[in-house]
Image (cartoon, rainbow, N blue to C red):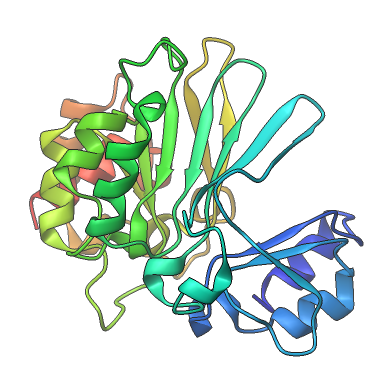
Length: 267
């Protein structure tokens, strides 16, 4: 979380109206005190008691609207923190963000399949065929970084997201995102973007309502970055371009997300 501080300052952001910390794990909560000190958020939502900070427990039913954008917590269900295990993966705050056009972003923390299934069962309005969804697109953060015990087939079939983002470190020791998750996403025709390949990812929307992604590694490529994904040969790179790109780009940094996904499926 400390890495977010200089990025926020670089964008001219010096105060935060709200901060959501999904759960207690270090890869989600480490540096909270430093970020709180530097940007003084008006409210901090968490699923655990953060020592020395005035926080609110995230829970189903909390929502607010800023500039026509609707924020609402979908999980935890528990009405009282006394029933929680306080900050474990299965307690993660799940936040849905919906803009005026109905386009949705689902931030899932580290919830396991059991929680995914419960959400799908209890929230039919999230389903792709629900009237409230109409034809609006959804992007989902792959739960638990794309671990094997998350991002279930049932979740993908119910939500039908246009794309999923797997937040994982390069060559991380956990093997995230797991090969089983890659297969599930491929089977459901969900575009996958991975931070271990793309770097930081920025989401915007086209006038047609489709997600558009900007990736730091493409925008700020360095000479030492690998010119091809995971050591692909020049012939393999050109074959991927011919199959997945309408116009062959001059470098891999201009390839489409489907190009990178295709190579991941061939590993």
